[in-house]
Amino acid sequence: MLMKSWDFDDLPLPTLEKPEDSAAASGRYHVPVMAEEVVALLRPAPGLIFLDGTAGGGGHTEKFLQHGAEVVALDQDADAIAHCADRLAAFGHRLHLVETNFENTGAALDGLGFHSVAGALIDIGVSSHQLDTAERGFAMMKDGPLDMRMSRGISRTAADIINTATVSELAEIFRTYGEEPRAMHIAARLVAAREQRPLRTTFDLAAAVTSIVPRTGPRHPATRVFQALRIAVNDELGALARGLDAISTRLARGARFAVISFHSLEDRIVKNYFRDRSTEWIDRPEWPEPRRNPARIFRLLTPRPMDASGEEVTANPRARSAKLRVVERL
Image (cartoon, rainbow, N blue to C red; front, top):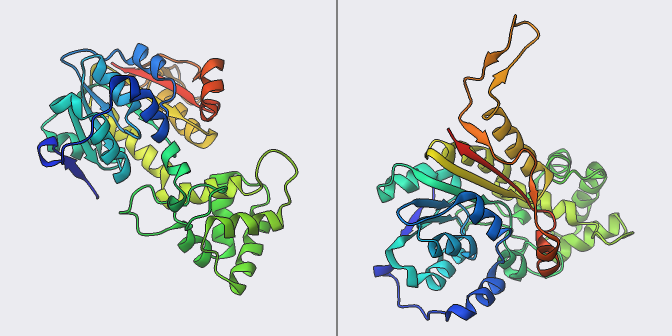
């Protein structure tokens, strides 16, 4: 488990941004999605300890800090932690940065001496900075090494998978994580192509998929393949399932927990997790009558997920697929 805590006393003095430049700085790294809705629902305030399990560019963390909360901000990406240390240094010791995945929330809080939190957020998926940095290998439209690791502590890259996995293994990845209908066909052709020359860059892979599945609409033919590989490299769905449990066990009574997801695979996991732990009564055909749900720990605050507003989507097109779900700890 990779985990590194940052203490501002150990960091070089940063160049602080002027308050009016904060939004611009956030935009350069990552624009927080539905920030105002998250604040309104989670209600950060002085004297409360909040968890931001996916610090990213620090946008949500900054909102919590501005409302007076003390924040534990986690991110497995060292670039994100360094950016937040610079951008948010003015908040001093009300901010605790830890380089780790949110599935390690318990260990992170224990390391800081915190038992529970009064609110928590995870904003799942790839950040704007990761997409826009060619050498990270996340984007089809920027040529770079076929990497896709959110943490340098992850040993296997996308190139490792695409150049060593069997046809059936690749097809399963594309089908399960990308919901790609041509999974087997693409996998077979990619394995044949790599025998001529290994696929090492994002342009290599994008071109190979395009040669198999010609472009017929606005969506790039390799979109689902890139998504599937990214999820596989980072074990994103497994980390999400483990992280939901890890965070839930550290919520104080009355604490609210928000999750922002960006595709159906993530949202389905969150929806089912919150539903299974917020339903008061359960029933089965073999039971004579309904029974109270022993797993119930939440009150569901969003029976249906919240979407970003039209204005926000216009300003930040990446918000268009975001879904926000929130529960409250009983």
